[in-house]
Length: 233
Image 1 (tube, rainbow, N blue to C red):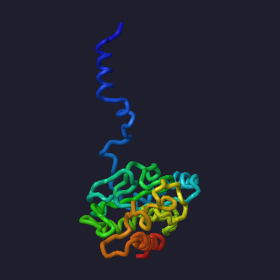
Image 2 (image 1 turned 90 degrees about the vertical axis):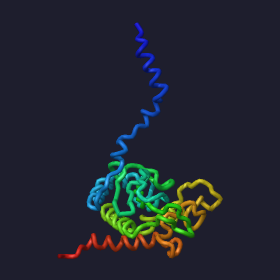
Image 3 (image 1 turned 120 degrees about the vertical axis):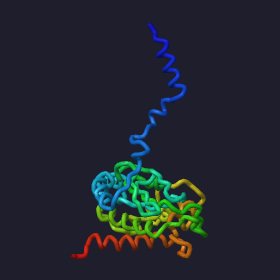
């Protein structure tokens, strides 16, 4: 015999809680989505993720890459599109549990790569970096994070392996993913072309436009030397 109360309850659930809402439940709650980590913990995470990242990168016939971003939003707004968020005070946040998780940080380039962002550049334009520019500690901890990742993943810190979103949009590494047609050759959308993405092209207002990536890589290489050849006490 039918239990009409159960049937009515089932219909109520379908009306107010669609099946899709259950299917899209995240694997971890909002409180677990981000966790503050140290550089030492970042190094361990990179070692652990290396086999999966290398496999995914090789499937695309390219090396493991690190892509650098800013959010273009106010300080302290974290985004899980990136593996790592670095806030205005230098705190380093991990999204999820692993650096090998696929995250949508860089158009057509997410497989076999790590996306890092600084939480800054709210209302920035190419002419004015805005009221919440990258802080000195953000840039230093970004460079340190790159050095730690490069050390653990055994990749050089050069423009072929570490690049800003704008540099990736301009295909400076010449891998030419099939970007959508935007009226520019090969669909390039970075610093030198349509400027749809120009993250970290400048780090402060008096910088030469497009110099940010080189500045960050130079800093990161200095930290990498310290990791490889620590001074004896």
